Image (tube, rainbow, N blue to C red; front, side, top):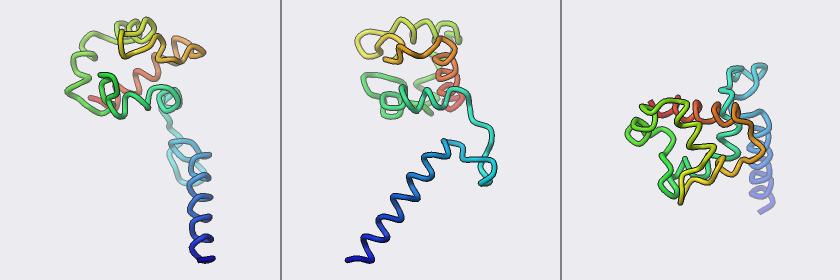
Length: 115
């Protein structure tokens, strides 16, 4: 039983350590130094709906769901993000502290994963 607790503790520590390095890992640890500028905003504010397709949100990575949105252009995507799309998409994706640029970067991150 004690050995199982020790193994579980080590797994938790390893997972928490990976979280602190960021999504791309550190360059010193052999990870990519290139992290998309919108990835952090996406992870903090967009992921919860766009990963699962909650309330009609286009799933990140779904070429089919994103294609008609991408066709409207980056400016239109940003405008609908800022204004929201009732009833599912709240204004600014509930990231009221995000700048327009941070929102644009998060959109670009989702688009880059959905082409």
